Length: 260
Image (cartoon, rainbow, N blue to C red; front, side, top):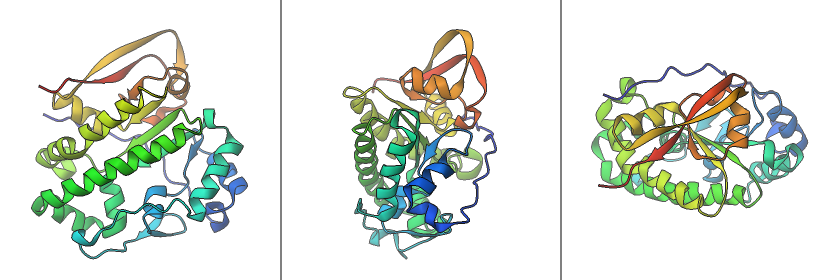
């Protein structure tokens, strides 16, 4: 049985000034006002794939059919270039890079209803897109690792058996998540960093017997965000990153199991 995880509420802050999306100083100031310092302020991978957002929040899908989707990243986008400069202002060693999972990206490209239909009826097409997105995510993460970023947060908020059903959660794990995490582990052979996985994804791979928890203990309680930065453990995520300011004397890192 795959457990669910109750998300820790952290409402998105409105973007009242669109200059925030392309002005590095304004972007950095906005990023500092959250529970922890994080970028981007708008979903960056969809933007680099051609999606436009109203006020940085509401996406306008650009495809009508899943088979028409082209996943060509354009790293010359103004928003992406501004983010690189904002990271320099904030400090690479202090900034969390937020990444949304493939279902969220495809929702922005196509629309949620069509994505759900594809999950049920065109798993083969979806698997191909997942493979392309795995490459995109890996390349995207490497770009920031080369700039000195230490912590990434990977979120797929819809990954809940109560929403998708356990079969679709299992398909997502098999068709995308495990492959992606194995690529992340390969990067860990070259860089020291932490990928914080949303607990919904964490519980899916643990409850499907694809991973285990391994405890990390501390003599004195520490803020969760400090644990993520000061103890690079490749894969973390037994609790929500929105607990960043809460203190703990024990957390769990995630250890993938060997393929049988």
